[in-house]
Amino acid sequence: MLFGIKIEDHLKIVTYIRIGIGSLFLVVAVFLFSLLAIPGIASGELKDMAILSVLGVALALLPLALAVPNLIGARGLIKRRRWARILVLIASVPELFAFPVGTATGIYTIWTLMQKETVQLFTDDPAQA
Image (cartoon, rainbow, N blue to C red):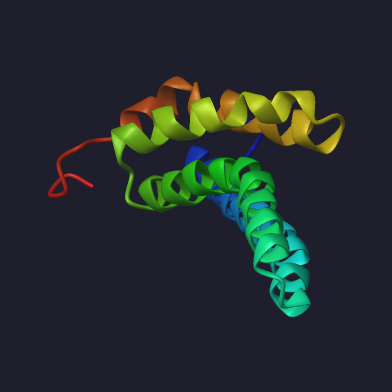
């Protein structure tokens, strides 16, 4: 029990945070792609379509690259997989630079996942999960 809250509850909060952040990045990726690809397609010009679609994909890759590890990691946290703990720790590092909310969620995630009690919860054996 840390700060009067069971570690399992801290882990649930971290999982919800990861799902929220991953979903937000996924929405941003779709929005950026749509923002550029749809006008390119609507123009009817092959050259415009190609340029804007490539630009849309390029701009959508960063938020997509941030969304995928958060969503996959959250799924693994739910199932208490050891690899998920490491993945979420790594995915939390870039967040530390997004002051103030990203810094707070990143620090909370790292703090929660580095606790001895949290490490003991994770296993690769589904029978023990």
